[in-house]
Image (cartoon, rainbow, N blue to C red; front, side, top):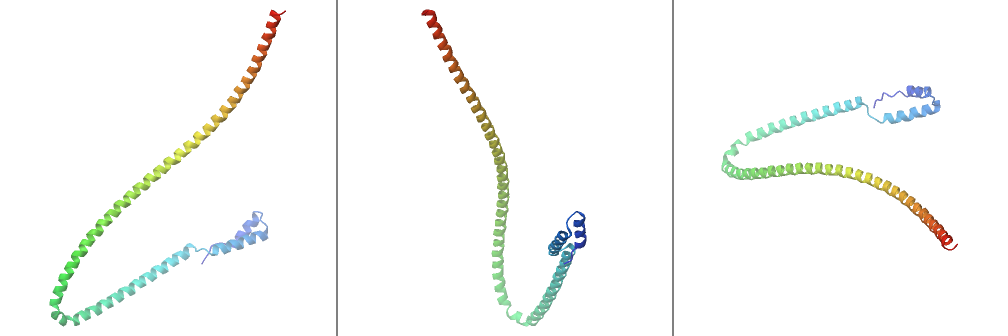
Amino acid sequence: MTSKFDALAYTKRLEDAGVPRDQAEVHATALTEVVGEFACRQDLLRLESSLRHEIEESEKRLVLQLNLFKTELIAKIDHLGAKIDRVDAKVDRVDAKVDRVDAKVDRMDAKVDHVDAKVDRLDAKVDHVDAKVDHVDAKVDRVDAKIDNVDAKVDSLRREFEARFKAIEHDLTVNRWLSGLIISLNIAMAIKIFFP
């Protein structure tokens, strides 16, 4: 397979970029091996052309064989023309059977067409269901995002509530202490006033 990769130019570019020569050569060698394993456009076009040619040749051979077979068949039919007269009665009976088979085939074709129509309708329904599933998936994703957002807000509110609760607890503790102090001072003042 042909490759347009120039290892020497690649090595030079690496060296110009500051890569040591030994490393640049190893890079170029490795890349040459990798690039050598891929087919280029020209290779694929040649392969396509070759395959097309082989297909055309196969078709020609097949047509020739069919024509030869047709010629041989016609010759045999001509040769058997005399025998056909003796078997006309049999052919009539066979024709009747063929007609019955044709009628059965027609009925089967109608059934196949009916089944095909059902399959087409089922395919349309499956496509419709797939679209609905995709739509539901999108809604579920949006709901999940909203739930995540609500969870984040709840966590934030919970932290804020806990902080406020701690502040209120602290304030209550200070108020209890101050209330106790005021009551103690009032009792002391009452004692001094009433029991001098």
